[in-house]
Length: 371
Ligand code: GDP
Ligand code: IMO
Ligand code: MG
Image (cartoon, rainbow, N blue to C red):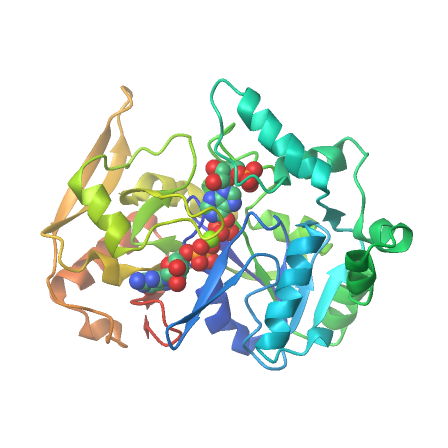
């Protein structure tokens, strides 16, 4: 039982990156198991933002190894850019390992992504990073693996990445054999999963905890804890169902207070109340052991805070409102010190989700966490 998994419980951007950074100190390897540079995982250190798209969010732990698993699709240009960023941050590039089985996102995939979106009567609102076409080529057996790419292509990018490519299965099993602890970092969120999300408004990969096994090449018996990350409200970038979406003032206030603009595309994120129905569903399909709640600070100052508790057959939703709180909670480090109304909100969510909330994030900085 040496692979713990962190996944998003909503539509992505739950704050997985900063929470992975927090847990990473307890692990020897942080591994991405799916997705590509459609992901944008931010860490904030002393007001400086580090936005990662492919490299796992364990970079700030000095000794942690970083692994990109076979379930990922890699845009070589993005990865080379990120390697430059890492060297600026003083991160030893030898800590980064790439599975030979990951697939490559080629320029033709980016073009196809844009073309297919333009052709759709109802566009999905993809990130335009070629992710769908790259996974489609993998499934139709015409894709290019990283191994092939580094062996056959003589571009500067391919030569640069070759130094990091390893036999991904041997890599992870050698570490597990040495009793090293592995943290699997999910990308996107449960509701964007290709099978269990709001299809067809999803990404093209499996994003749930089970995908950590297929994406890293380990059996289910190796999986230990599964931690789900949920925001204290909901956001979604791109088109598709969003039952708790707020159209008016409260939604705009969430967007402004939460700086809800896409890391990758800069698009404004759609905002809505916490959706307890979707969260319970996500707990089931992932097998969640514990939840981390993020961005609680964003709700400070709302007169009331909503929680969607049921979907009606006619497509409307039932929303329960709790009293809000005026106090800034960013300095709070103990859950017991939260304002009473905030504490009631957290407890209500915990009861509705049915899983313990073990950590609450109250700001973007590394230590803005309450336990
Ligand atoms: P990820 O894709 O799940 O890693 O999430 P993103 O990094 O795309 O989006 C989360 C955003 O919220 C980032 O800008 C974080 O810096 C920020 N953030 C994370 N946790 C908190 C929090 O508790 N409070 C506030 N105010 N911002 C947070
Ligand atoms: P992180 O890891 C939020 C969304 C896109 C679009 C749909 C399909 O930062 O949480 P794609 O380019 O994957 O074909 O787009 O999925 N999407 C995300 N939304 N966070 C993400 O990643 C996302 N990755 C993809 O907006 O609706
Ligand atoms: Mg993100």
